[in-house]
Figure 1 (tube, rainbow, N blue to C red):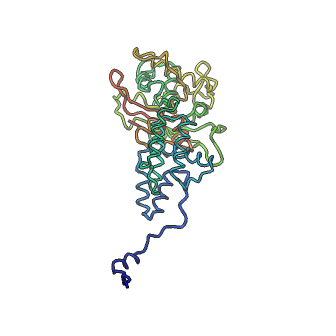
Figure 2: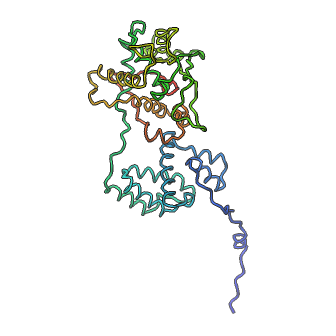
Figure 3: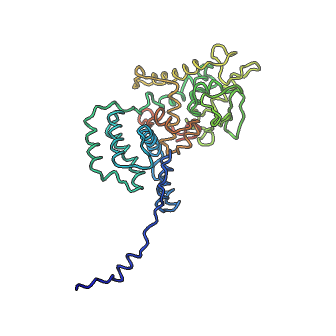
Length: 382
């Protein structure tokens, strides 16, 4: 008879080796992509230090973009009765086809969605880069009809406007007209605060100082349109001065919003002036209307471009609201954190910025030099 083999010592060791303990319940995917990455990393037994490190391995702009894509993916899962916490390659394939056929996104954008999902799902062991079907789907997307991608280029040039404000008729300020002083103060304030026109109109002329910075507040009855019980706009905020970061002979000092507002308040001082910060130019006994503020901001931008012969001012599509996007985008491209941008503009969700305000800000070189420090969205940027 053939003898039954006796288990070897090594086999016994292998049989007795304990298997890794896997939690019985999978982690739940959060509405926040970064938090989901942390949960998945900790679920695999790694330390909180590792989870924190991997969760913030992307640049702020990439992280914001990925969060926008993650929210769309979660909404698609909900609309199609899929569980976000139970991903499969098949579900991802359906999602990519949805982006192509229903949303008409470009192939490069769909690749971005796939990269975003892989940054999360690969931690769960689902590597999307190795699936041949997903590769074929991406390749097939290039033959589908697509809509034009959103243009992130601003419709006007910030450097043109800043350069324009450093010359006559705006400087020297003691010789400028009240209208020109108002135009300059309005634009620099709008850039420095990233406020809506309605918020600028509701500013109070009562100010105070914090060092060399100016503290400004709203008139008491003003309520911001985004105010809720859980989220309210700060009633007082600080406008930073450039006096501490530029020399007295530097041209950049002429772009200090605190300096412009100080001159404007002195020029319009009167015991009977209205409570609002900005007054109607032709009738200073009345507050300036929102329509007038919007007009003066647009007029300043158009006049700046008209003053430079190489600019195409006839093709400008200018909105006063654009200044808010320009100011916050400057912070983004200066590697500022997303939470800082949200606080500066009083936004609750990063999607608002990514979908409607994000712009590519490129400094101009050559005849129109790129000016140095400027205050944008509550921060001094250079």
